[in-house]
Image (cartoon, rainbow over all chains, first blue to last red; front, side, top):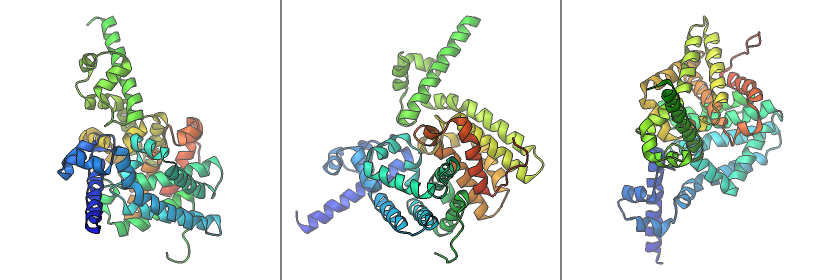
Amino acid sequence: MSTAAAVKAQDSRQRFIDAAIRLFTRHSFAGTSLQMIADEVGVTKAAVYHHFRTREELLAAVIEPLVTQMRESVEAAEAQRTAHARADTVLTGFVDLVVRNQDLIPVFAGDPGTVEMLRSQHNVEGLVERQVALLEALDPTPAGKVRAAVALAGIACSVGPSRLAADFDPETLRPLLLDAGRRTLGLRAPRRPQ
Amino acid sequence: MSTAAAVKAQDSRQRFIDAAIRLFTRHSFAGTSLQMIADEVGVTKAAVYHHFRTREELLAAVIEPLVTQMRESVEAAEAQRTAHARADTVLTGFVDLVVRNQDLIPVFAGDPGTVEMLRSQHNVEGLVERQVALLEALDPTPAGKVRAAVALAGIACSVGPSRLAADFDPETLRPLLLDAGRRTLGLRAPRRPQ
């Protein structure tokens, strides 16, 4: 493939990903077919198949940047020296991930179809488990486990086009979400601004 | 209709509702058709149509008991004398609602399809708004608004068959969720046990 052709293929791949995000947001993953994505882009279903054989492949491409960001956040957190710093680093990274991807988060946060699919991708499941473990380590009791789950779910599920993102711009929302998550977990804010 | 016939109609109506809950939980609302519900019960699609003309009608029947419980909780909270008591009453009621309906909550908590449909039912939207207002009244600043959203979303989205409900029985989970929600909101627990 020539460089120009490779760029063009990459462009149309990205157009399908962008269309998928719009449709998943509007109709959920389960409610979106490859035909709908073809219609949204204005091409035939065969053109979509050229890049993605299944909706699952397209979903995997959609979440790839999120998985990369989560991996970086979890690795940075695990490199910290104290449980408090590990928890605060991973919480801060998660808030940033959610705020940056606020259109997309509702697609995953509660839809049983996507959650099941994500769980079956072991690399994602492993990252989510490491993130949870870093927060649960603050208080390894049932109460601490529930607080970790409530903090993560609360941050992920409260954001979205028809929820907090409708009222706050990302820069305002980021520190407020971090504050709410820290309170849930009983984490004091670090002395130096981040 | 004779009494026996009325009881029978009520029974089969409930069988469709129970089947719908199982399928919505497994495949999401958008991923469940009336045909799938007919297959699950083992009847024809015409038999489903006899009770419910659309999936939306069936969803409305599924959530009816939740709407009733939320209305009672919001009204009991609004009758309290202080902002603290109003917030704590509505939070306690919401935790109970979520714990009692933990199979069903993931269907609504994040699926864009159902959330949009619920919003269009004005009585539900009004109740959700009143519930949020009772929590936001604790701290009418952007930070307070975000904490209220994180507390409610955290409680609703952390529960579910493959989440906290897999690790804790309802009686254990209820006070731990309430504790996490109170921390998020900065609500002190009342002195007397509830």
